[in-house]
Image (cartoon, rainbow, N blue to C red; front, side):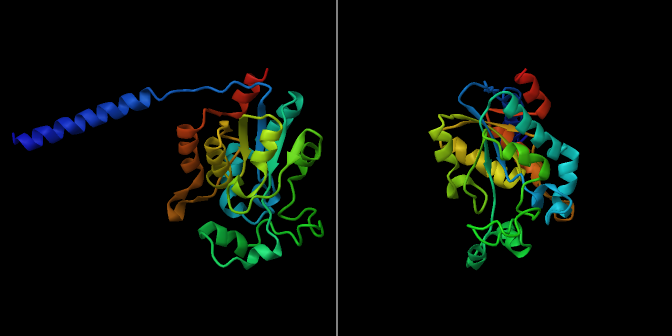
Length: 245
């Protein structure tokens, strides 16, 4: 057999073996919940989570499959019951935001379909029950003293709002994330918090994402891969409940 072919076969076998070993030995850093831990919910809003929302046609199946609406409510309940500070990072667009001169694919789509639209940053005119409003079952938790609502993020991540400031001012260095949408705002918040030096866990069934099979796109599976490769731990809602008992 040609020496080059033998070398190539050996290298390929070694790579496959090494890959299997690497996956088998993927570390599990773990995540201990203590007094410096907070729950973060991204975009718990009608446009993402309700059949009346403008994105339901592409996210609805994922939301229902993951029981996302109820699982997010469970996160609020767990935080309240265990005195864990809760932070909500919302997504709003005001009229001046629609004057932007460029944007990415889904950013442009959000503007085109009127997602998260509000009439004015200083007015709640037309806000109640609009796509930008909270899901009704979350309001009792979001409006409680246990919850900090940050200024809105504008694209996907918290670089454009005051989330990190609010977390640090409360002595938080660990964050458990749920909310919408898995591969966009939720993942972007995870990535930025990691870069900012926070310890981060994600609750995989307290989120969901757009699924577009005709285009070969599955935002949820893409996000789940990155959660598992980046976060200190990926919980299910049930696992988080057990951890807090």
